[in-house]
Length: 498
Image (cartoon, rainbow, N blue to C red; front, side, top):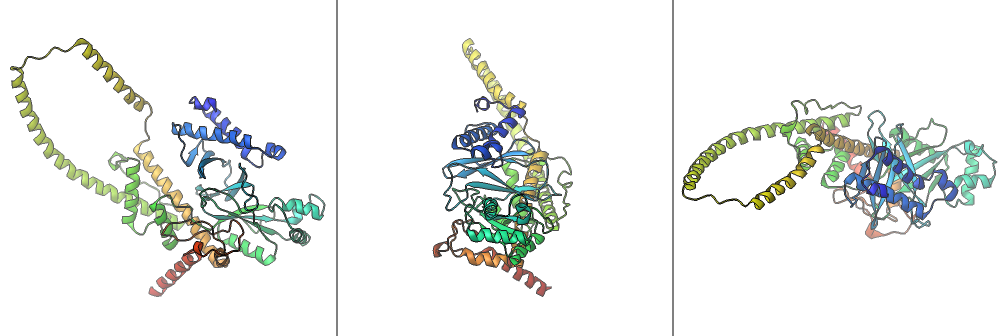
């Protein structure tokens, strides 16, 4: 930490520091399996990670966000009550559809309500290479084959209980018997863990201790049927332990545009209703990065790729390119008019300057020029030299080019569209399989925290405490089921109109 505070920027040293901090928080680390981690180790890990982020920002203050160390490593900083929680994410070399990662956290949450670790799940598109963290409330699905796990030891209730403790902190006798029965019949079982994501202001990525254990063949078949429809990371043909993730809410909207894009994707499949709305979005983004379209090379926007395996994402890319072309044409027209006006203004200003210079020359014959103090002239030169230093520093750290800034805007937009399309597919699959109606009826009894603004008035989609008591003031106004139903009705109306 002391070396990092000194401004050390060596990539290898920063990578080593990341690894040192990752160890005490990773639940699969050998040190944690022996010592069960500790508060001191966790604080050291947080100090290293937050100092790495401070180095990235070039400031002492740290803000929430995602900070890339290299292609595979980044630090995810989130608010955790009055403090920040820094989570080290290592994506690895392989591309996974979804992969949950568990981290130790201190102080330990209330184990009657939450699991003792937090879980962060990443989703990757595979061929497209777009990756995101699931920040909304979601369900982590674990598919286990008890007969394979039991083969490693004795087929005793004690060994079955030991295996169950990976998922359920205190398995009951009934849970053990169900697990043993599935092992004897060589059937898979399902565990559902409910994760808050970033929908709770003080408990990011915490999981409910009330884990759902499904052993009925019909229930398992229903979950695997869902896996056939959306890329959640599960496959009924994979006969070993596997995990997947199904989102139940969109991520908390960062701004009004996020909220509008989530609504549009859910209703129409596209992030914007029309080209005008898309142009308004990109106009704001261009202003944020101070990008003038006149700085771009010719045909840069025209050459933006709009090809994608997913037709909806390809249409979204095409809409973005057309909106940028519209903004560019508008910019060219404005610049053309501005040049004409500037020429007129400059001509008038030139004539004014000529007249002013003539008046000043005539006054010089009347006023004797004052002698300049030698020390004053020296101080003025020193002041000019000091003002020139920051300019030289700016030249050394060249900002990204206009083309790079444009690509950054487009990449951020494409990643958002991919993320929201993934959620949309999941929600419609939940509706078609009937799982959404079941979850919706449960959520009326024990909702917890508002997730969205006025545009999507769905509140908690998971019961973090397993409570069955009803809280009318927390009941949600518009569930994902109603959104999906509205989409189905809209599609039916369109077909009737056609």
